[in-house]
Length: 87
Image 1: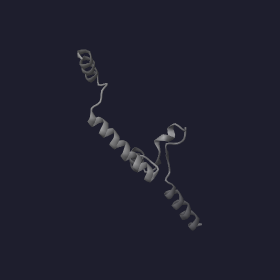
Image 2: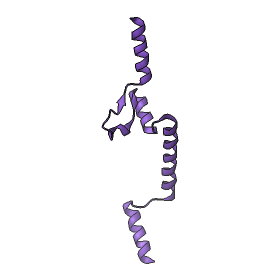
Image 3: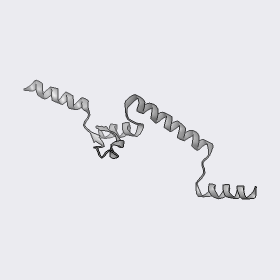
Image 4: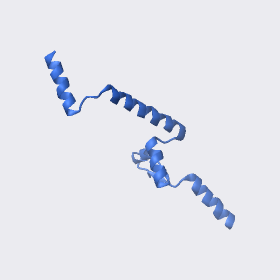
């Protein structure tokens, strides 16, 4: 019993353990991100970056060696329509 307590104490000092609140927080963040991604096709961070940059950003594109941020399709389509109308 003393060895188990000593091991738990050592692990808690170096930060290799987690508390129940850490588990609940991680699960809550995962559920929120999954819900947002299911509705928008992008995670919470992707939506935040897109809002700041003003483009359509998907950080997962780094792994596909694709552009992380692209021009918004709506803006591009609107610009094309305006250009066609002015001709």
